[in-house]
Length: 301
Ligand code: ATP
Figure 1: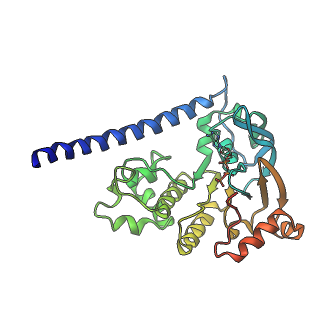
Figure 2: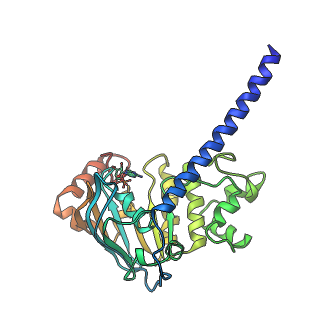
Figure 3: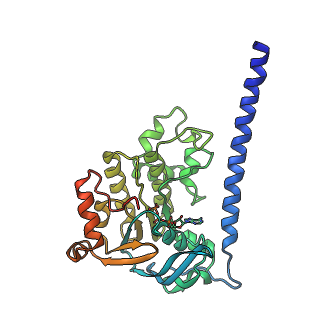
C-alpha cells in the first residue's frame, strides 16, 4: 500500500506542476494573442501628453464580427477630470477601458488622447501614460516588491515602500516573514481581493501616470476595506484624468460626468443631481439600490 501511495502522491505533484505550467502557458498565449490584435502604425510617434484629455468619437466595436458591442459611443474626459460609467453587466463598460488602453483597435470612429488618435501613437508611449487598477489584479509569480515595482523598472526600494505605504499595504507586507521578498501569485502567497487591489494601487501610484482607469470591484470587499481603498484611490487620482467603471455611489456622485450604458450605447449622461432629476434609468438604479446595503450603481444585468 505504501509502495503504491508514494508514486501516486508523486504523480499528484507532477500533475499539479504540469497543470500550473499549462495555466501559465495559457495566459501567455492569451497575452500574445492580445498583443497581436494591435500593432504600431508605420511611423507611429510617441504620444505627447499635454493635459491628458480623452475623447471617444462615435466608436463602434465588436470582438466578433457578428456581435456588435459598442454602437456609436462618444464621450469626453477633460484633462484632470473624472468620468464614471455605470450600467448593467455586459453593457460594454470594461470594453471602453480596454479600447483606451488599446488592447484592441476600434472598428470605426476613433479614440484620442490630447487630440492624437491612439492608432497613430506608439503603444509603449500610450501605456506609459495610463495606469489601470483592474477589478481582479493578476499578480506575477514573483516577489511582492517586483509586483509593486513592475511598470517602473528603475524604482528604488524606498520608492516601492513609499507607494506601498500610500496604498496602505506596507504594514501587511512587513508583517510577513519574508517581507517584500515574499513570493506571491498563483504559486506563492495568495492575497485577498482587497490586498491584490492595494498592490495594484501601489503599482499605479509608483508609475504615476496622467491617465487612470479604475475598474471597481463588484464584490467581495467588506465596506471598511472598500472605504479605505476608495480613499487611497481618491488620493492617487488627484489631478489625473480618470475613467472609472463604477459600482458604488460614493464614486459617482462627484464625477464630472456619469455615463449610463446599456447594450453598447450611452443612454443617459450628466451629473448625479441632473440624472436624478431626469427620473430615468439612473434614478431608477439609484432608488433600487438605495434600499440595499451596497449602494451599488451597477446591476447584474
Ligand atoms: P461587467 O459589469 O459585468 O464587467 P461590462 O459592462 O464591463 O460588464 P464588457 O466586459 O465590456 O461588459 O463586455 C461587453 C460584452 O462583450 C459582453 O457581452 C461580453 O460577453 C463581450 N465580451 C467581452 N470580452 C470579450 C472577448 N474577449 N471576446 C468576445 N466577447 C467579449
